[in-house]
Image (cartoon, rainbow, N blue to C red; front, top):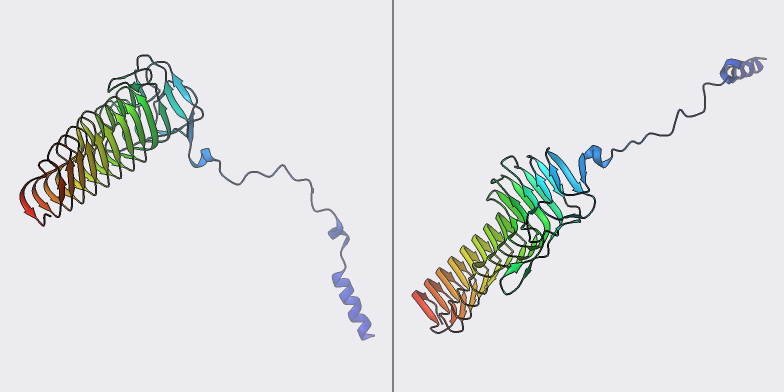
Length: 319
């Protein structure tokens, strides 16, 4: 009897009341699931550029959605501070005849803190025996009034009548290429891992040049205060001209191959001028076919091959 009573109590405890069997609400979802991730524009609001000419009047991030071509004037004009322009792998081109305008112009004093990335600038200017002419832009990237904090990275420029990438001293150019411009290939305070070929005046002009190659016809291949691991070539000017040159090579056809205040582990080659000219040259080699191989105040462990081979005030460990 006692056992039966316990079973009755347990069954009563676990039995569902009629009210518990009734529906607890609609099983139909209120709507489709909402996205839980942010879009790219929410993370980094950006403005597309799909036609040119285009003027940037407000701070922010901008990106190309297609190739752009103008028939005259500038491609993209920046009139604001704190701007990023991502060329996004596309090309900004000009068919202006004669060449005129700038592909990306920093226009005025209010163009500080600007970054230009990842794309191509193209024109039709060619080099005909050191005479440059044709259609396209006058400049690839340039400025009007000395902007501060400008960075250009991963940009290739070709076929401009004047300069490829021409910036003020508070600027950085990295991993860029320039080919066939009538004046200066790349000018910035710091230029790294970049190449400027077939330039009418100077290839690379910088306070600090690192891992660069420059080819400038009349003035210098590379002109820098500090040049490290650089090569410069100039048919009529100085191959590489630097106050301090470290592990560098300068080649010239008719002038000085390498011209430096201090040259370390460097080479200089010239067909008819001075192979290597330095106040202090260490572990260097100078060569000239018909001029002086090496001219220096102090030369240490250097070899010179020229006529005359050496013009050295103080010689140390000379072979």
